[in-house]
Picture 1: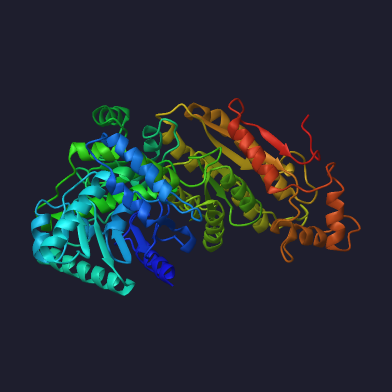
Picture 2: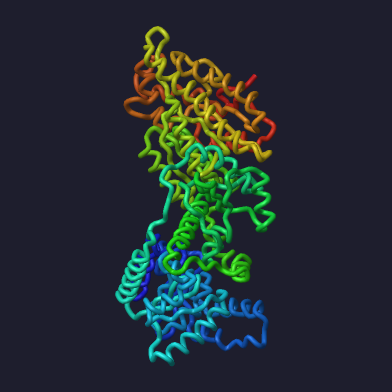
Length: 635
C-alpha cells in the first residue's frame, strides 16, 4: 500500500505543470531497511510501482563516511556514483537519483521534491531567504550548493544543526535556486503542506502587486513565425534536424535561474529584432553554444531542440523561467545563478544522462519532419506509420481532424510522445492549405518531406460521368497537389536558405498515371497531369534545394479505397460494368489480382520504401517511380 501511495502522489504532482515540468522532481518512500526512490530519466507522471529504485539504506549512508580532505571533488563524485549503484538491490532496476542521499537524510516515510514556479520565485529571489524566514519560520533554507555529494553533505550538516537548535527535523527544506523538499509520514500530510505552502506564496505574490500568471503578448504574429521559424530550423542545428516550436511573445529570462532551466533551455536565450546567420554566429561565439530559445522582440518566442517532444520541453522551461523571473519581483527581483554554478550544471554528466534518457525513440530519419496529406486512414495512414517507424516526426493532415488526431495519438503511443501530430486541411481550398502550413511552421518550424497523398476517385464512362464528379476528382488530385506544393515550397525555401541540405516533395500518384485506365478517365487524367506537374516543379524548385518526385503504387486492395462497402472501388467498378462478366465484388477483386505478376496487391510499406528511396537518393528529381509488383514497367 505504501508504494501505491507513493505512485499516486508522484503521478498527482507529475501531471500538474504548476509543480513539475520536463518530468522533473523526485519522490521516495522508506521503511526500516529500504529506500524506494524515483530513478533518473523517468517522469513523475509516468512512474509505476516497479519503476522505483529499491536501495539499501545502510549502503546509502556510507556516502557520508567519505572525507573531502582525502579526495578531490571529481574523484568524490565518481565514488558516490559507484556507491549509489552498489546500494541498488539485486531485485531492482534503474539508475538511482543523484538526490537519493538527500531523501535518506530526511527522517520521514515520504519525501516529495518539486520545483513549483511560485517556490522558485522565492528561492531565486534576492530577498528570498529573508522572506522565507517570515513566511515559513518552521522551514530550513539551504544556500545554493552544487548538486551531488557536495549538496548532500551540506544538506546533512545544516539539517542536523537546525534540529539541534529547534528541537525538530524540518518538514520543509527550501534549496536556493532549486525548489523544495517536503517530508512527512503520510501522503495526506504531504499534500496538506504543499497546499498551504502554495496558498501562502500566491497570497504573498498577489499582495505585492505582481501578476501570478506570465504576461504574454496576446496577438500571435503568424507572419513573423512563418518567416523565422523555418530559418531557425537550419540556423540552430548544424545537421538541419532541429524542431522549432513557436510561442506568442513574452519577456524571456535574462539569465539562469535553476539547474532544470539550464539543462533544457540553456543558461542564456537570444533576444534580437531580426534573425540571420551572423546573429546566430555572434551569440554562439559569446556563449559557446547556439541558443535553444530565441525571442524576436515584441513579436514571438521560439524554442528549439532535436525533436518535437524536447522542443516542447524547452518551450515549457522557457515559459517557466520567464514566469519565475516575473514572480521573483515579489521577492526583491531575480538572483541568477553564478557563473561557477551554471558552468557546473552545463558540464554535469548526471544531467546529460537525464536528458539523454528522455530524448525518446531514435531512427534513421531522426529530426526530420514529414507531412502526409490524407493521412487519417488507408494508404496515407499506412505511409505515416512507416515514416514514423524510421524516425520522422509525422504530421497527419486530413479533412477529418478527429480521424487525424486519433491516428496521430496511436502513432505517439506506438513510437513515443511527440512523434506525430495532426492538422486539419482541405487541399482543394487554398485558404485552408495556407493556414495548414502556417500552423505547421508554428508547431514544429518547417518541413523536410511533403507526402502529397490525398486523392479521390470517381469511376465512370466518359459517356456518362458528370461534370460535378469530373471537377471533384480534378480539384483534389490535380489542383490540390499544386496548392500543397505551392505552400510547402515557400516554407522549404525559407528553411533551406541557410543550409545546403535537400528537402523533398513526393507525390503519391498511381499506376493509372503511367498507363490509361478504362472507364476511369477523370482519375487517370488527373494522375497523368500531376506527373507533368512533378516534372515541372522539379525543374523550378531545384534552385531552392527541393527535390520533387512521384511514386506510382499499384492497387491497395485492403484499404478503404477498394474495400469500402458503399463507395469502394470494387463496388464502383462492379456497378459501372468496368469488369466484363463480373457478378460479384469477389469477381472484381480476382480480376485485378490476376493482373499482378507478383500475385499480391501493393501495401503502404512498399510505397513508404519508395518514398524513403526518393528522399535518400540525392541525384534524382522529377521521376515517377513505379511500385506495382511488375504490373506496370517503364520503357
